[in-house]
Length: 309
Image 1 (cartoon, rainbow, N blue to C red):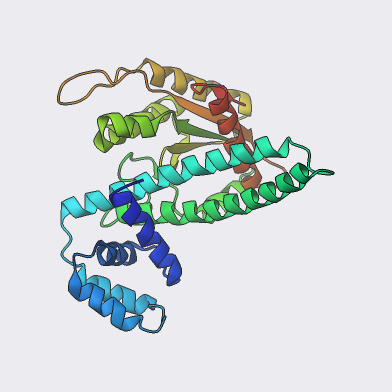
Image 2 (cartoon, helix red, strand yellow):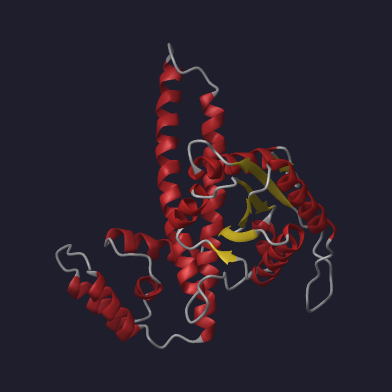
Protein backbone atom coordinates (compact mmCIF):
# COMPACT_ATOMS: atom_id res chain seq x y z
CA UNK A 1 0.00 0.00 0.00
CA UNK A 2 1.05 3.55 -0.68
CA UNK A 3 -0.04 7.05 0.16
CA UNK A 4 -2.79 7.78 2.68
CA UNK A 5 -3.31 4.17 3.73
CA UNK A 6 0.30 3.85 4.90
CA UNK A 7 -0.34 6.91 7.05
CA UNK A 8 -3.68 5.54 8.22
CA UNK A 9 -2.08 2.29 9.39
CA UNK A 10 0.71 4.30 11.03
CA UNK A 11 -1.89 6.35 12.90
CA UNK A 12 -3.46 3.18 14.30
CA UNK A 13 -0.02 1.89 15.30
CA UNK A 14 0.62 5.21 17.06
CA UNK A 15 -2.59 4.76 19.07
CA UNK A 16 -1.61 1.19 19.98
CA UNK A 17 1.88 2.32 21.01
CA UNK A 18 0.40 4.89 23.38
CA UNK A 19 -2.43 2.60 24.58
CA UNK A 20 -5.01 5.11 23.32
CA UNK A 21 -8.56 4.12 22.41
CA UNK A 22 -9.26 4.40 18.65
CA UNK A 23 -11.70 7.31 18.99
CA UNK A 24 -12.14 9.75 16.09
CA UNK A 25 -10.38 12.57 17.95
CA UNK A 26 -7.39 10.37 18.87
CA UNK A 27 -7.15 9.05 15.30
CA UNK A 28 -7.44 12.57 13.88
CA UNK A 29 -4.63 13.78 16.14
CA UNK A 30 -2.35 10.84 15.25
CA UNK A 31 -3.08 11.11 11.53
CA UNK A 32 -2.40 14.87 11.52
CA UNK A 33 0.77 14.48 13.59
CA UNK A 34 2.20 11.78 11.32
CA UNK A 35 1.42 13.82 8.20
CA UNK A 36 4.18 16.27 9.11
CA UNK A 37 2.21 19.34 8.05
CA UNK A 38 1.45 20.68 11.52
CA UNK A 39 4.75 21.73 13.10
CA UNK A 40 3.14 23.00 16.29
CA UNK A 41 1.38 19.69 16.92
CA UNK A 42 4.53 17.70 16.14
CA UNK A 43 6.57 19.83 18.54
CA UNK A 44 4.02 19.42 21.33
CA UNK A 45 3.84 15.64 20.84
CA UNK A 46 7.65 15.50 20.97
CA UNK A 47 7.67 17.52 24.19
CA UNK A 48 5.05 15.38 25.91
CA UNK A 49 6.65 12.08 24.88
CA UNK A 50 10.27 12.99 25.54
CA UNK A 51 12.13 10.10 27.12
CA UNK A 52 9.68 7.49 25.82
CA UNK A 53 6.71 8.68 27.87
CA UNK A 54 3.29 7.68 26.52
CA UNK A 55 0.59 10.21 25.82
CA UNK A 56 -2.39 10.00 28.15
CA UNK A 57 -5.95 9.97 26.85
CA UNK A 58 -6.48 13.44 28.31
CA UNK A 59 -3.38 14.79 26.57
CA UNK A 60 -4.39 13.22 23.25
CA UNK A 61 -7.88 14.71 23.46
CA UNK A 62 -6.45 18.13 24.32
CA UNK A 63 -4.05 17.97 21.37
CA UNK A 64 -6.88 16.99 19.04
CA UNK A 65 -9.12 19.82 20.25
CA UNK A 66 -6.34 22.42 20.02
CA UNK A 67 -4.63 21.42 16.78
CA UNK A 68 -7.23 19.43 14.84
CA UNK A 69 -10.46 21.21 15.62
CA UNK A 70 -10.91 22.92 12.25
CA UNK A 71 -12.00 19.82 10.34
CA UNK A 72 -14.28 20.44 7.36
CA UNK A 73 -16.71 18.12 5.61
CA UNK A 74 -14.15 17.01 3.02
CA UNK A 75 -11.68 16.02 5.71
CA UNK A 76 -14.42 14.15 7.57
CA UNK A 77 -15.33 12.25 4.41
CA UNK A 78 -11.67 11.44 3.73
CA UNK A 79 -11.21 10.07 7.25
CA UNK A 80 -14.29 7.88 6.84
CA UNK A 81 -12.98 6.54 3.52
CA UNK A 82 -9.66 5.71 5.19
CA UNK A 83 -11.30 3.75 8.01
CA UNK A 84 -13.66 1.89 5.65
CA UNK A 85 -10.77 0.97 3.35
CA UNK A 86 -8.67 -0.18 6.32
CA UNK A 87 -11.57 -2.30 7.53
CA UNK A 88 -11.96 -3.99 4.15
CA UNK A 89 -8.22 -4.59 3.76
CA UNK A 90 -8.00 -6.08 7.26
CA UNK A 91 -10.95 -8.36 6.54
CA UNK A 92 -9.29 -9.51 3.30
CA UNK A 93 -6.01 -10.15 5.13
CA UNK A 94 -7.88 -12.24 7.73
CA UNK A 95 -9.39 -14.33 4.94
CA UNK A 96 -6.01 -14.93 3.28
CA UNK A 97 -4.29 -15.74 6.57
CA UNK A 98 -7.03 -18.16 7.56
CA UNK A 99 -6.93 -19.91 4.19
CA UNK A 100 -3.15 -20.28 4.31
CA UNK A 101 -3.40 -21.69 7.83
CA UNK A 102 -5.91 -24.31 6.71
CA UNK A 103 -3.66 -25.27 3.80
CA UNK A 104 -0.70 -25.74 6.15
CA UNK A 105 -2.75 -27.75 8.63
CA UNK A 106 -3.15 -30.42 5.97
CA UNK A 107 0.60 -31.07 5.86
CA UNK A 108 2.36 -33.58 8.15
CA UNK A 109 3.06 -32.18 11.62
CA UNK A 110 5.31 -34.89 13.07
CA UNK A 111 8.52 -36.72 12.33
CA UNK A 112 10.42 -34.56 9.83
CA UNK A 113 12.15 -31.16 9.77
CA UNK A 114 9.43 -29.98 7.37
CA UNK A 115 6.79 -31.16 9.82
CA UNK A 116 8.42 -29.21 12.64
CA UNK A 117 8.52 -26.09 10.47
CA UNK A 118 4.88 -26.61 9.53
CA UNK A 119 3.89 -26.83 13.20
CA UNK A 120 5.71 -23.57 13.96
CA UNK A 121 4.10 -21.78 11.01
CA UNK A 122 0.60 -22.97 11.95
CA UNK A 123 1.15 -21.68 15.49
CA UNK A 124 2.38 -18.31 14.24
CA UNK A 125 -0.52 -18.00 11.81
CA UNK A 126 -2.99 -18.76 14.59
CA UNK A 127 -1.45 -15.95 16.65
CA UNK A 128 -1.58 -13.61 13.63
CA UNK A 129 -5.27 -14.43 13.10
CA UNK A 130 -6.05 -13.56 16.74
CA UNK A 131 -4.18 -10.27 16.46
CA UNK A 132 -5.90 -9.42 13.17
CA UNK A 133 -9.28 -10.11 14.77
CA UNK A 134 -8.46 -7.62 17.54
CA UNK A 135 -7.29 -5.00 15.02
CA UNK A 136 -10.41 -5.55 12.90
CA UNK A 137 -12.62 -4.92 15.94
CA UNK A 138 -10.79 -1.65 16.67
CA UNK A 139 -11.05 -0.49 13.05
CA UNK A 140 -14.77 -1.30 12.91
CA UNK A 141 -15.35 0.66 16.11
CA UNK A 142 -13.35 3.59 14.72
CA UNK A 143 -15.32 3.62 11.46
CA UNK A 144 -18.62 3.60 13.30
CA UNK A 145 -17.53 6.42 15.59
CA UNK A 146 -16.35 8.52 12.66
CA UNK A 147 -19.51 7.83 10.67
CA UNK A 148 -21.72 8.43 13.70
CA UNK A 149 -20.61 11.98 14.53
CA UNK A 150 -23.79 13.98 14.91
CA UNK A 151 -25.97 11.21 13.53
CA UNK A 152 -28.07 8.31 14.71
CA UNK A 153 -25.44 5.83 15.88
CA UNK A 154 -27.94 2.95 15.62
CA UNK A 155 -27.59 3.08 11.83
CA UNK A 156 -24.56 2.90 9.57
CA UNK A 157 -24.28 6.28 7.84
CA UNK A 158 -23.21 4.94 4.45
CA UNK A 159 -25.68 2.09 3.95
CA UNK A 160 -28.42 2.78 6.52
CA UNK A 161 -28.08 -0.81 7.70
CA UNK A 162 -27.97 -1.30 11.46
CA UNK A 163 -24.57 -0.47 12.93
CA UNK A 164 -22.71 -3.33 14.48
CA UNK A 165 -22.09 -1.21 17.56
CA UNK A 166 -21.07 -3.21 20.56
CA UNK A 167 -20.52 -6.74 19.28
CA UNK A 168 -20.69 -8.21 22.77
CA UNK A 169 -24.18 -6.76 23.32
CA UNK A 170 -25.27 -8.15 19.97
CA UNK A 171 -24.08 -11.64 20.90
CA UNK A 172 -25.73 -11.46 24.32
CA UNK A 173 -29.07 -10.56 22.72
CA UNK A 174 -28.85 -13.63 20.48
CA UNK A 175 -27.99 -15.89 23.40
CA UNK A 176 -31.27 -14.87 25.01
CA UNK A 177 -33.38 -15.40 21.86
CA UNK A 178 -36.11 -17.89 22.95
CA UNK A 179 -37.06 -19.14 19.48
CA UNK A 180 -33.55 -19.65 18.15
CA UNK A 181 -31.98 -17.82 15.23
CA UNK A 182 -30.08 -18.20 11.98
CA UNK A 183 -27.18 -15.99 10.90
CA UNK A 184 -26.33 -15.14 7.30
CA UNK A 185 -23.02 -13.39 6.68
CA UNK A 186 -22.78 -11.91 3.16
CA UNK A 187 -19.50 -10.58 1.73
CA UNK A 188 -19.35 -8.46 -1.42
CA UNK A 189 -17.29 -10.13 -4.14
CA UNK A 190 -14.45 -7.98 -5.47
CA UNK A 191 -14.87 -4.67 -3.62
CA UNK A 192 -11.13 -4.02 -3.90
CA UNK A 193 -11.33 -4.36 -7.68
CA UNK A 194 -14.33 -2.03 -7.87
CA UNK A 195 -12.61 0.61 -5.73
CA UNK A 196 -9.40 0.41 -7.75
CA UNK A 197 -11.09 0.45 -11.15
CA UNK A 198 -13.91 2.94 -10.56
CA UNK A 199 -13.04 4.78 -7.34
CA UNK A 200 -14.19 4.72 -3.72
CA UNK A 201 -17.41 6.60 -4.50
CA UNK A 202 -18.57 3.81 -6.79
CA UNK A 203 -17.59 1.25 -4.16
CA UNK A 204 -19.76 3.12 -1.65
CA UNK A 205 -22.71 3.05 -4.06
CA UNK A 206 -22.28 -0.70 -4.55
CA UNK A 207 -22.33 -1.24 -0.77
CA UNK A 208 -25.54 0.82 -0.55
CA UNK A 209 -27.07 -1.31 -3.30
CA UNK A 210 -26.08 -4.52 -1.53
CA UNK A 211 -27.61 -3.37 1.77
CA UNK A 212 -30.83 -2.32 0.02
CA UNK A 213 -31.03 -5.64 -1.81
CA UNK A 214 -30.64 -7.60 1.43
CA UNK A 215 -33.28 -5.49 3.20
CA UNK A 216 -35.73 -5.93 0.34
CA UNK A 217 -35.27 -9.71 0.16
CA UNK A 218 -35.17 -10.30 3.92
CA UNK A 219 -38.11 -8.12 4.93
CA UNK A 220 -38.35 -7.43 8.65
CA UNK A 221 -35.16 -9.29 9.53
CA UNK A 222 -32.30 -7.16 10.78
CA UNK A 223 -29.43 -6.38 8.38
CA UNK A 224 -26.24 -5.27 10.15
CA UNK A 225 -23.15 -3.76 8.54
CA UNK A 226 -20.73 -6.24 10.06
CA UNK A 227 -17.47 -5.04 8.48
CA UNK A 228 -16.30 -2.97 5.52
CA UNK A 229 -17.66 -5.29 2.82
CA UNK A 230 -19.74 -7.63 5.00
CA UNK A 231 -23.37 -7.62 6.15
CA UNK A 232 -24.88 -9.93 8.76
CA UNK A 233 -28.59 -10.69 8.50
CA UNK A 234 -30.14 -11.97 11.72
CA UNK A 235 -33.13 -14.27 11.25
CA UNK A 236 -34.65 -14.54 14.72
CA UNK A 237 -36.99 -17.52 15.12
CA UNK A 238 -36.44 -18.66 11.53
CA UNK A 239 -35.03 -22.09 10.53
CA UNK A 240 -31.88 -22.23 8.44
CA UNK A 241 -33.68 -23.54 5.32
CA UNK A 242 -35.98 -20.51 5.09
CA UNK A 243 -33.14 -18.11 5.87
CA UNK A 244 -31.05 -19.70 3.12
CA UNK A 245 -33.90 -19.26 0.62
CA UNK A 246 -34.14 -15.55 1.44
CA UNK A 247 -30.40 -15.01 1.06
CA UNK A 248 -30.43 -16.92 -2.23
CA UNK A 249 -33.17 -14.59 -3.42
CA UNK A 250 -31.04 -11.59 -2.42
CA UNK A 251 -27.97 -13.04 -4.13
CA UNK A 252 -29.86 -13.59 -7.38
CA UNK A 253 -31.39 -10.10 -7.21
CA UNK A 254 -27.97 -8.52 -6.67
CA UNK A 255 -26.49 -10.37 -9.65
CA UNK A 256 -29.38 -9.17 -11.85
CA UNK A 257 -28.92 -5.50 -10.97
CA UNK A 258 -27.41 -3.22 -13.59
CA UNK A 259 -25.22 -0.78 -11.67
CA UNK A 260 -23.93 2.18 -13.67
CA UNK A 261 -21.49 5.05 -13.28
CA UNK A 262 -23.54 8.12 -12.41
CA UNK A 263 -21.72 10.57 -14.65
CA UNK A 264 -21.50 8.43 -17.80
CA UNK A 265 -24.22 5.82 -17.33
CA UNK A 266 -21.68 3.11 -18.16
CA UNK A 267 -22.44 -0.30 -16.55
CA UNK A 268 -19.76 -1.47 -14.13
CA UNK A 269 -20.47 -5.13 -14.78
CA UNK A 270 -22.13 -7.85 -12.74
CA UNK A 271 -21.74 -7.38 -8.99
CA UNK A 272 -22.25 -10.37 -6.70
CA UNK A 273 -21.81 -11.50 -3.13
CA UNK A 274 -20.97 -14.72 -1.32
CA UNK A 275 -22.76 -15.80 1.85
CA UNK A 276 -22.51 -18.31 4.66
CA UNK A 277 -25.41 -19.59 6.77
CA UNK A 278 -25.16 -20.77 10.38
CA UNK A 279 -27.99 -21.87 12.67
CA UNK A 280 -27.99 -21.23 16.41
CA UNK A 281 -25.01 -22.92 18.05
CA UNK A 282 -25.33 -24.96 21.24
CA UNK A 283 -22.09 -23.44 22.54
CA UNK A 284 -23.18 -19.85 21.97
CA UNK A 285 -23.62 -17.11 19.35
CA UNK A 286 -19.87 -16.52 18.98
CA UNK A 287 -19.55 -20.04 17.57
CA UNK A 288 -22.44 -19.38 15.16
CA UNK A 289 -20.67 -16.23 13.95
CA UNK A 290 -17.45 -18.21 13.50
CA UNK A 291 -19.25 -20.88 11.46
CA UNK A 292 -20.98 -18.27 9.29
CA UNK A 293 -17.57 -16.74 8.55
CA UNK A 294 -16.15 -20.17 7.68
CA UNK A 295 -19.06 -20.79 5.30
CA UNK A 296 -18.42 -17.44 3.57
CA UNK A 297 -14.78 -18.41 3.04
CA UNK A 298 -15.92 -21.74 1.61
CA UNK A 299 -18.25 -19.91 -0.80
CA UNK A 300 -15.42 -17.63 -1.92
CA UNK A 301 -13.08 -20.61 -2.36
CA UNK A 302 -15.67 -22.16 -4.70
CA UNK A 303 -15.59 -19.10 -6.95
CA UNK A 304 -17.94 -16.71 -5.15
CA UNK A 305 -21.50 -15.68 -6.04
CA UNK A 306 -22.98 -18.53 -4.02
CA UNK A 307 -24.49 -19.35 -0.63
CA UNK A 308 -23.02 -22.12 1.53
CA UNK A 309 -25.20 -23.49 4.33
